[in-house]
Image (tube, rainbow over all chains, first blue to last red):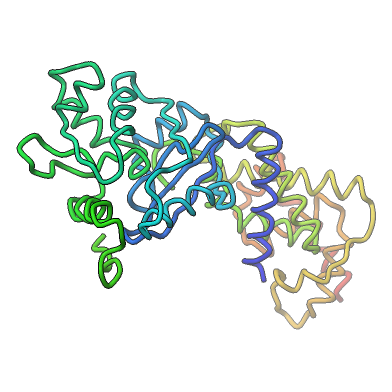
Length: 200
Length: 154
């Protein structure tokens, strides 16, 4: 009964904090076939999708720099994103309608992530191509760095970017996750027999 | 979220339960506890950032205590204590109902002092912080409250 009372009180508090303009971002931890995802959503779109149940210290610092300390736990405001991710993992969504909010990132990071966001579902590109499209031919290594630190995984599809020699490159969620996402997008359906249990 | 930068969410996640329970012990009513909970956290968000890193808990208790005292002074009415049994300790052969009535009868400042010391077992240093008075004053307020509670549960 205490738990329910506290949950009710929290819900009302979060609602009031939004109404007063005190809350700036709503965060939630979603279940996914690749393990928990920590997500944050604001009025300008998705500000974070992280593998694991917490953001990294540096990305939390970026969110607070860009949005202030007003991050509140709020599954309700994150529910559109949650639904779209669920559809994506079920092979039923190819494009996210929720926008990406890249505030707090450097101009270079924003360019790289912007170029990455335009790589279509099911297709692959290389770090070098992304760097070129972002306006810097010779920055493929730096592009790899910017993508490695992509704070909006899946929605900004950095898993579609691989090395020029055809190897997978890296991935914040682990290479197994990258392989699974690419397989999902190639076949257009969930893996036969459903998603294998996550190793994370 | 427990890393580096402090956010509203971390403050909520870390302290929501104890602040709610504290408010429940002070008011004895779930609805009033909910109101004090709201007012406490909203006041903290409006006054952000907390005065010193590492003292957020004491800060919240202090705000909650003031909200409860203000409220009691404003309302000057007897609060329903049906929900106190969720929070009150059962001991010394004093029934919950007796204890609840005795706590309810205390003046607001004494009530907070009593709950912080006798129900939550806080050190006097923290109680003084929450009440915004000296440790000595906190001790005497708790003693006064104890005397009153003992008298009314005798």
